[in-house]
Image (cartoon, rainbow, N blue to C red; front, side, top):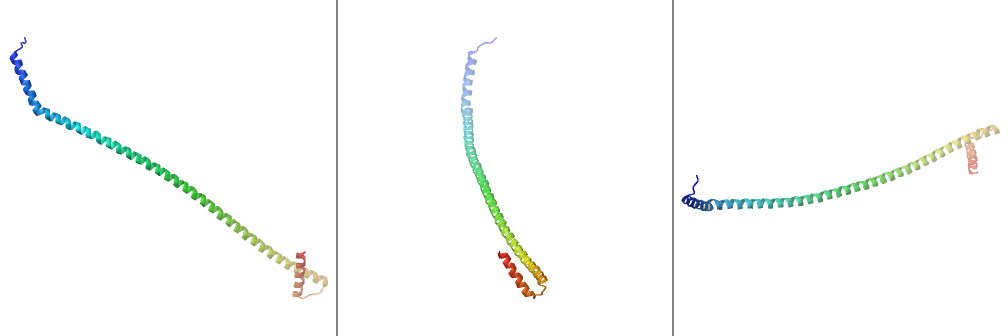
Amino acid sequence: MLELNPGLILWTIVTFVIVLMILRWTAWKPLLAAMAAREEKIRASLDQAEHARQQAEALLEQHRKQVAAAEDQAQRIIMEGRAMAERLKTEILEKAESARQHMILLAKEEIRREKDAALLQLRSEVADLAIGAAGKILDKNLDTPAQRSLADAAIREITKG
């Protein structure tokens, strides 16, 4: 079956130690260097990721400030627009009131002129009627300028009283 051979065991141990030494000088150092480089690369990537996260947070905060400033500016513009609309409304109402007052004054002046013209025409017709009636009553023909002056005087007396 299986037999233990001390010489084979000794040569196996010696061979194992020699291979271990060779591997230590040839493969162990490059393996440790590769692992150290990999560890450094991972550490640099983590540092870079942390830096990128901090930059992203700073940009996010800056963006929030810009949004808040934009909202404030929009509110200010809306308030200014409302104030301007109110001023325009007041100005338009004042102009409309002024135009209304002007139109009322013009209408009153026109009414006064029409009234004066109607009174003048009425006086003239009354004078003509009075002259005609007086002429029939007196059965006498007065000259036209004299009749006119008499009628005007009579009308003036009537309007005074």
